[in-house]
Image (cartoon, rainbow, N blue to C red; front, side):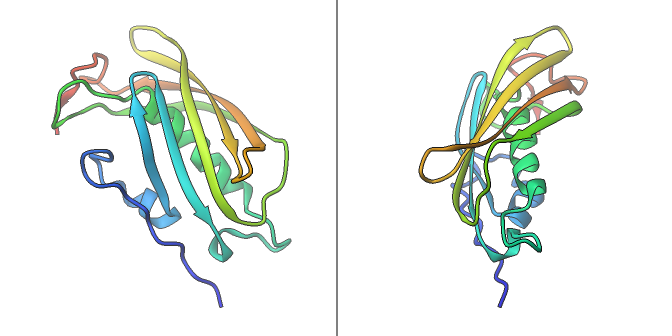
Length: 150
């Protein structure tokens, strides 16, 4: 029997968007500060591919989401910042059969409209299972830390 893992959302203060995609995959934003974001996922049956390991698409999604959030921290409560991913790559360094995964995204460099990130994904034993790099462009009004009203 395949079960969808429960969303572990910590509430609207940490994930102001209430992103439906996060709920679908079971992602939780567990830490968020300027230039850094950590996402967690309890990977289970619903995330496995036909070979019985966690699908790379979940891990790639975690890389994309953690990196995006790293560049979207907002200094004004209630305001938001938005961006689009321009480029994303991933290298898988191990396999995972399940358990808690953590993706840590960090802003490596930022310009006026674009930011670059590096992200690593770890299994529950702390072993790196993937890493990636990405390029993102802020949407209009999201270039500053203050963001804009939701």
